[in-house]
Image 1 (cartoon, rainbow over the protein chains, first blue to last red):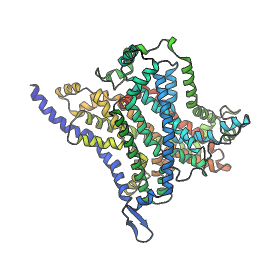
Image 2: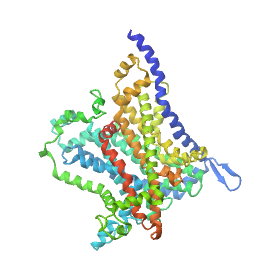
Image 3: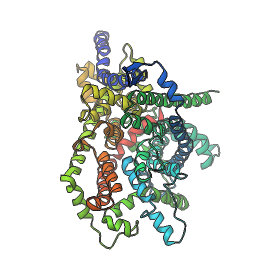
Image 4: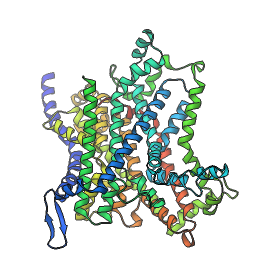
Length: 298
Length: 313
């Protein structure tokens, strides 16, 4: 009896699986793979003044890897990544551990309050911080003037990358904290009990039990941070309006691709740059994944 | 609702709020164990995160004049929040209302669509074996790493050829595909939908579609809310895509609209746009309220849903 009902059910199951998956996969092909393929295709052509669009093979790529504006843009976001991401993830980790320690009063309020900036559009975040940074009516400038201190120049050449890093950190510490906190809540209590019985204190438990258990979640946050940093666009694009002398149209790689496509009308070269940028991000992500995996199994 | 999604014993990937006191009762601290220095340090951190929002709240009660002339972190002598709100909604024949409605429309359609698509596909990948399922899933997993802004320019060019540029579709279609959402839903479905329930329903003669819509979707609710909420944020806050896809201000979402106002406020210090700055500030405040409320109301769902993706890799 059981065998006769199970057999047709299994046949049905095999047929139903693809149907559940199909709508997503069709859109995925159309809206993910097709644009990628199209960018790759476009990147092989160049628009010439005479003769229209011509196939040029990898010429655009040769041009791109020697393009100082692109190199500077990528270099700037790489520097941004190297400084901002560790600070952000370390803060997120400390906050998550503090929340999970059970030692906090007002833990719920603190948790949600730190997370709230994530719900703020980056446009609004950049506008707000842009005004806060402002040398005229920004409160920091007002305070320093009242105290006869030098006015901090958040929007100057030397400070800009740090000011951008601050905005991005403000926006995403809470988000990363929540991911790490959620992961911490899933560690089985028995592990703590065993560690405590072995005489481990709170710090020791955090270091030897919680951190290893957090590794997958930390990888996830790191991966999202790579992707986010390298495609930095919104914040510099908005601060560009308040500090046009500091932020050029090629300040970040993404800003450069945008200005190539929409103000420079260099569609093919813009496709090359965005394709390359995507490639850089995928390679950086894989490199991080591989290093982490190698460390896990020495 | 959360109690129905309690995972079978032994799985650790789906934290459920109701379960916490039972398994982690030891760690529910008595008030004597609470640390005042740590609390103070965290409140200081909290102040940093709330400072800009506090500033925004104060600033939206000021005229553009007062924004320049009064201290940034306190009210001016003549608070005028309501006047600012009214001016924001009536500027340029109420274009801000358009932006708000556009944003709601783009965000709701995209996030509901994306969540349902991801749930169906995640369920399909988690609970069925079929030819090519690994390849399909890995392809999508790899796509998690492809940055959306690197996709945006080629998507724009494709859409331009298809005549979709400067229509709502240009914003909604690309937002429907959420690879991380699919990943999250697959992980979630694996634990939250027990095979035994599916088998029982099949033996009772329920069709696969019916099983999915009446049983699985309900069990998937926290994961679904998570994907929904995070897609909602992504589309609500989306700036790059609408910036390149749209050039008709009546189609703008709030983000692009606000940045265009901000540019106006920056350029024209005097004349017709002299009060623009107050509108940018008040508009910013209005634009963040719905999402903050959504997150606060739905927190128990998205926090448990998020945990699933953070643990399994």
